[in-house]
Structures are given as structure tokens and as C-alpha cells.
Length: 220
Image (cartoon, rainbow, N blue to C red; front, side, top):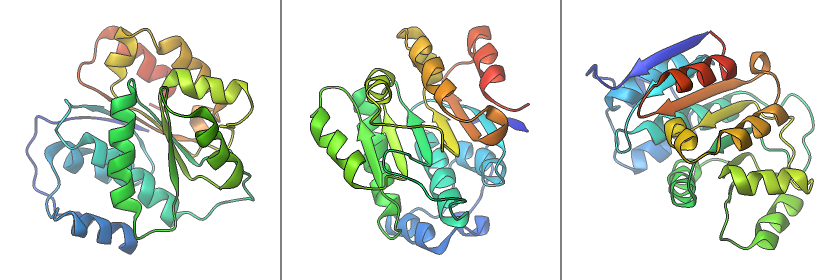
């Protein structure tokens, strides 16, 4: 089931009311966050139940934490169903720019610091071999990346997305504007069918094109 949420409502919700995994809650406490922002308060009760969510939110509204909390809590709460190999992340987060991907990684590192989860950003302009080495040598739980560089890793068989349990598409409208949708579609085809993964999609605007994409990528 897909829940569509917008930041326009102003609910008040304490993170502790969500009964998050203790090590994740510890990371939130370290940041000094007590109350959820509107987009977090609207989306988290649905996404934490495993539902697909389509969120309308601008940068700076707390949407990044909304999807990171969902991703991290799910990976901590639900044990891996089978043995996973190097290069097979459980969560994939797509961002339109290197700067945004690296900011997401930075925010995620803060939230996972008390957990056993590992993450990696895969973006252009960075050392390919260094990123490749981590994928080959470590079991990475969360991959954050830009479409073009991720396609390179998939094509060269350094990254395998068949075990993706949760997919995040951030700033979908910018993906569309920047011409990345063909690459995004290709990456999504590498993941399990939408019925077998959770999908979170955030966009500042929801044009008809974005709504059409969301209907093909999420469960109604």
C-alpha cells in the first residue's frame, strides 16, 4: 500500500513514540532531536510499517531523516533472510547529485554509529577503485549513489541489486529535470519487483510525469 504525504500538516510527534530500535534511537538522541518534523510525523508511521510512501517535501524539511530512519530501523529490526555476498546491499538510495548523495551519507553515518550497519556512497568524481575495493572487501548494507555511477558499477558487476529490500528515490523531480530517469529505470529493473521491496519516493513537486513514475515504482 502506498501512502502519499505532504509537509503541509503540522502534527507533533516525539521520536520515542515510534518505538524505534534502541541503537537508532540513541543516534537520534545524540543529535538532540526530540520531535519529528511535519514530513517525518506524516511519513514515518506508514513507512515504519513497511508501506510504500510518496512524500512531497522541499530540501530542509527533514525528509532525509524520514527515509533514513525508515531504512535503518527496518534493517535492524528484520534479520537477513539468507546469506548475502559482497556487493549486494539491502538498501539503495538514489540521489540526483553527488553533493546530495554525500550529504545523505553523512547524515546516515551519524544515525548508524551505534549500529552494526555499514554504508557506502557511490558517486562520480570520486576514486572508482576505492569504492570498488570496499564493495569487494566488505558486506555493505546501505548504498547511496547517483544514477550514472551506480550504472557503471552494475555494468561492471561490482554492484548487484537483486537483494534490495528497500529503495529510496530522493528528489525525483530533479531526476526528471536532469534527464536521469532512463538510468533510474534501469537501476530499478535490477532490484526485486515492487511487490517484493519497499519503496520510498520524495519530490518537491508532483507533476503528472512524476505521478506516473510513482505509480509504476510503488504499490498502490
